[in-house]
Image (cartoon, helix red, strand yellow):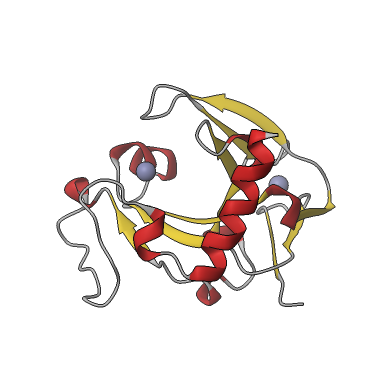
Amino acid sequence: MEHYDGGCTCRYVRYRMTSRPLFVHCCHCRWCQRETGSAFVLNAMIEADRVELLEGDVEVVDTPSNSGKGQKISRCPRCRIAVWSNYAGGGDAVRFVRVGTLDEPDRLPPEVHIFTQSKQPWVILPPDTPAFEEYYKAAEIWPAQSLERRAVLLAKARN
Ligand SMILES: [Zn+2]
Ligand SMILES: [Zn+2]
């Protein structure tokens, strides 16, 4: 099975995504700009049970979010690098893995650009990747396989 390994900067935390993610977001919102100290964040959305902690552990930090409902950011307890987060919407079942913490981040380029209304003006988006001023509907742009995986998650959440 295709997998993706990553970890923090001090190498205490090592993790593995055991399959391709559901979808890869590039978020240009002000909140992500502030959290990364950069122009955008790259998040690979994936089922929590497809992320294995290989070494170390994470410290979960409750952090305010744009929705007002907060997000939980999982960080290395030593070097404090954020490796993934959970948002209120997807709950604990979906992780947003920080693509920049993968050993080979080049393997997961963004599949959508969101909150482009606050995109840094010097960031030029590729014309063939979907882009939205705010958010979007998964049903409109996700591949069928990811939508099927999402349906499984939603069914689990209802039970
Ligand atoms: Zn670390
Ligand atoms: Zn954002």
